[in-house]
Image (tube, rainbow, N blue to C red):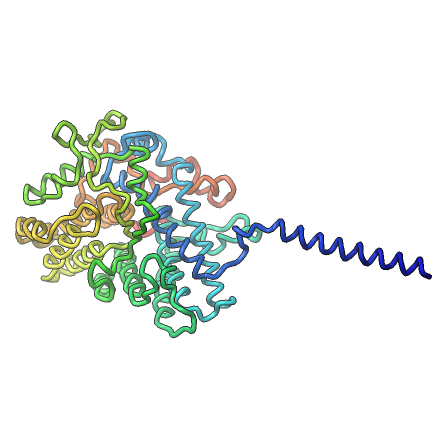
Length: 477
């Protein structure tokens, strides 16, 4: 009996020792720097950084700026995009931006779930901001790529080949999420404000509501070909930014402006001759012309984008405004005023030129490292004279295009495609030697073309980017 008791004691001791050892090993195997869960207030900070830096400010803006002729590509893949050498139709070209967009959408859905039915139910400020950022990121994605996976996307291990949703349905979701975001930001919550975790507005819900209304104005205008609602655009603008201090922009000392960083590292983007010519046409009263561009041997040397000019670094003028401290604009005050001016001009309202003048002044004085004064803006505005009809509308769109220099390229690209679809394609000069190869959209990302048959079939050889408009520009997908 004694031997049996000893044996049992030994077995129990061994079992306990093994259990403790397994617990200890489980603890050792945990990566404390990669937690499986965290508070939504911490997650959303990362989304804000990535939405600005990797989605809005990086590759998509570089390529869109070249296609809209805000800039020219003079080296490597940017040169290939410039001369339409394969780059625009390759699925590898936009793969980074494609993946980054889906990463933000996946993360934002996690936040929304946590704040609606999860452990942070009732955290209305974080929820509302997440809904606005989801709408923003989703719009960037569908504006550039057209029909894309959304409803079934971001569910690894559950749905391996998500179906492709129509852009028309995606736009309904964009408007729904923006309106839901505004509603939630107006609710009372027991959760504390995001405060410094909100790197854009510091936890100011009122400013996020203004941003949502501004985005509603942008996307309402985007759908003008399908369903014009210019008074709606005006109403949303009036409920949005009061001045440049309200802008939806990202400024952080620890995160460099991606356009500046890319230029300093790669030197692949330079001054486009067509854009420089547009600036010269404004006359000497527009002091931006002399200040925007660097000089080589005392003169501006642009890349002649009406032909396949020579590839090379350091041989062309570049933007003189390049600075890592410049903000990344998600929605600027000047864009908002130009939206209102366009809507008023299309409704033949007499105040359209006054609004345009205010938009020009806002673009002149936008908060970048290189700035101009209101006095300089006033002198240029005075030189414009009185405009009416199509002449006024064209000037509004041209000045809006100029205001997007240097890296609000995505919105310039969206405007050009919209204007072409609406019969206003001559408003912004486009001189590329291969107009038949103007990219009407971006190709789907390689990671999904290779793994999702739904996208592989739509991608084909990628040449569809030269033939098929996105839905809001009159296409079918």
